[in-house]
Length: 564
RNA sequence: GCGCGGGUAGUCUAGUGGUAGGACAACGGCUUUCCGAGCCGUUAGCCCGGGUUCAAAUCCCGGUCCGCGCACCA
Image (cartoon, rainbow, N blue to C red; front, side, top):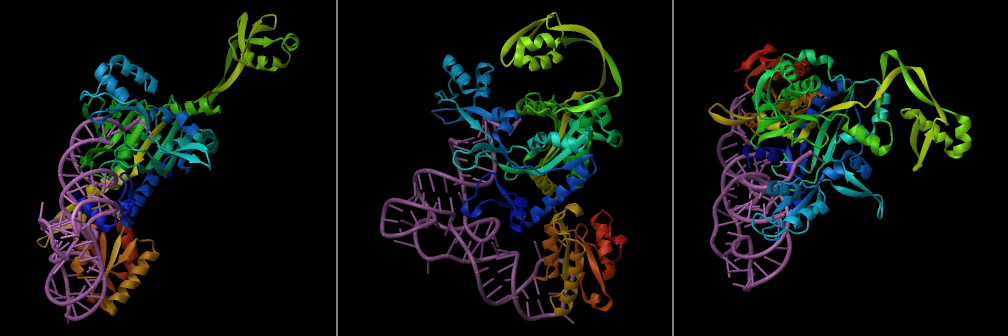
């Protein structure tokens, strides 16, 4: 185990879930400190992607009824057909294996795979024969209600909950594009072989923004502020670029401005969270790598001890999801976009002759008239009414040219989705912050978190655990807590030992109550990164700490240096 | 899922069939104590299940977790 993981477990950032029952791969518990970091990351995310966008946050169930995932395509594309060798026991994804060995594009169904296997006498690399192909579904399934109940799945992404609520959401935004909807929550994937602790989990935390736009206008008013920023890009042909976002869009490396905007904003967010710029890059998905719903996708990747790890996916999902849900639910999930000026359109229309249609078709007449409205008029019109074919000639309608005013059009919005893996980001932040240096000739472990990301922001430490120091320290502690600062108190062990304790978990500031405190009501603030101390009045402590915690200013600006 | 290697206090580690030992950490105390000081004391462990044996941390089987490789990762 890495030195970092050892510390994270020992100090209460992360633990193996179900540990006393032997554990289960793919699940982790956030201890007090890890949970603190993740919460702070979530709040930072809200600041960026909810408050500072035209966006809202919602919360929908983690269980979804089967229909949702049939429509979304997860029920089929999430299911792989697998074949297992009788001899060596290896399992392959059938379609991949067939393509690799035979060069055939096999359909991903059991029947199709079976056919190909028999036809070509498909064998394993080791020479063994294969068992019957089987479906492997990577969603967790469950039953809603008692008995046979209703089939449901644990959601593999939070996004579907947003798409399903689209009508309500569009209404909430008064049908005006663009708008964004976010959700922060758990999602579940029944990974075959979860590895690398935090990196591949079966239950994980997502923060997703679904940004609905007019497909003809994939721009963003705030793009200005990012367009001249240089960024590291790896395109789908593995070419590396270091160019401005504007150029990337103009050269067609990034499909459009809106994707570029979210790439830039994501980068800004990740840097603010504490990821190191030199360990961050954006990589475009290759054509065969993209999810079934995506037309273009860029990942933010962080360099960690596990290599480059995907931490954010920024995808253009086009109208895939809304169209699918329209199709499967029968609900109209389009948005009416008015033209600036209504336009006049001359067109031919079939005007029904009610006195003929009524007697001839009786109860079907009403439906026929409705359908007639929608079809291209011609001398002879064929319609399908309740599964029955009806042929109409000009006996039943006349063709007229009419002028109509059209005020707008219905379109299905496209959706741009920045999707964040909070667990991976939390871990990457911790790994990038983990450092060692030498203080007074001794090695020290220090977690150089951004101040606003630290789970314990301030530690209050009496120099001696004697009543006169302890009493003052307790008062300072209460004062800081009352002002919303995450503060801990510690009087156990020598002062040096305690500084090390808080360095290790990334606490940016230690307040020490010493002999001089008792004389003049001043305390020292010690900076985690430099170990410098300044002396300030207790009365000014809250104001100074708040300023320090929300900025990167140096403590020496705030008081007399007590110790270099 | 397959193969290989591991699993001993919170952490690291010694222990090849015969009373589980140490270091660090944590906790209590002593020491006028500003960068992991010292001294005394305390808490705390053989991954789980089965088998072999008079006797299993140790040998065997199965499971599980961790690491690595293969496969998988919409």
